[in-house]
Image 1 (cartoon, rainbow, N blue to C red):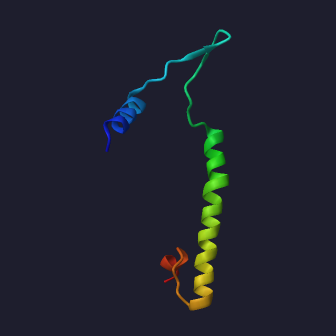
Image 2 (cartoon, helix red, strand yellow; image 1 turned 90 degrees about the horizontal axis):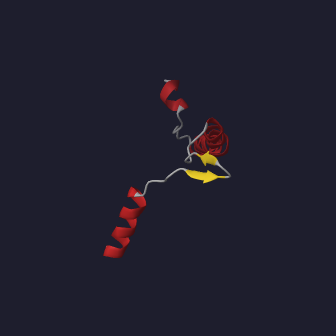
Image 3 (cartoon, rainbow, N blue to C red; image 1 turned 60 degrees about the vertical axis):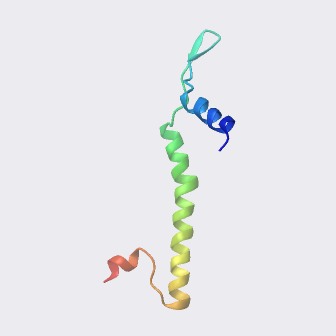
Length: 75
């Protein structure tokens, strides 16, 4: 890797954000909030779980291979 690339990574990782002031108010640094976690669950985790379970069900229906999580608890 080039020195330029490594120095850019080092500056990015060690740079600390100082609180900014906008119209006399201190702006806090970015953080993950409860609303952000909710959005992650609704728009990322739920579709992934639905798609994965649907693919597992289709594989079991077409080929008879039980590869879903329910196969672990079925026996």
